[in-house]
Image 1 (cartoon, rainbow, N blue to C red):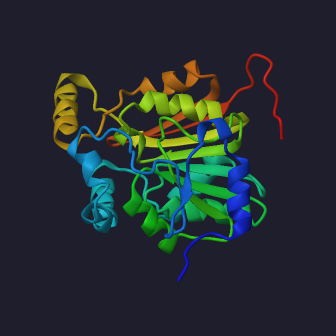
Image 2: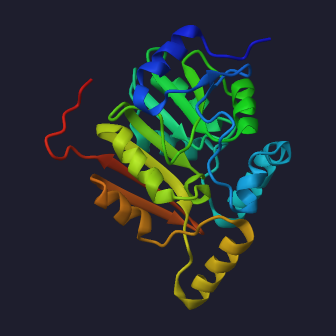
Image 3: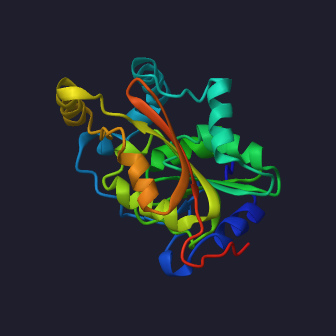
Length: 263
């Protein structure tokens, strides 16, 4: 049985790519494009190594559900939270949207439905196991999956209308490099939605953050860190919604320095 996307989806995905950034890739049997091969992003912490195991993939949903209840994160199963994320992305029929750090594709499939048959949703993750799960559980006629490094994306400049990074930025070794890539790949007036961690305030909060980071390997971002980073990268209309130890940030990629929307 083949779980791969239709050939037309593969062709449309390739049109988003920058040939200079993806000189070597292959189409895997599970049905995703692999740009990393035997290489992988650095995995200095245990959480990064666990992400590349069947054990982590198998417990992903149960562990994430418990984490969401603990710290107040958005839940992909809740209709109101899904609607909030879709509203933040402002997806239109025919749009190209990237789900960065897609895991098993819970949101990628949803985005595919939102952009319609002429649109394209591309899930990106570095884990073979997550992508195998995604191609089985969240495939679609306009959905594709890529194995790639969030810190060095294979997409061309200004190739995506929207990018989501949900519960993933705090796991990336160089998260601000990933934000550089998001800014590069988004078209002018493109939208970004980021759901990530939020460090608690105060002296005790700083201690708790260091403990959480040390135990889990997940980075805890300061209240203004993501907002300021997006502003510095040419984003505007930045909005932040916080709850518990999480934050949902939305923004628009502004036109800078004579950029044009080349669609």
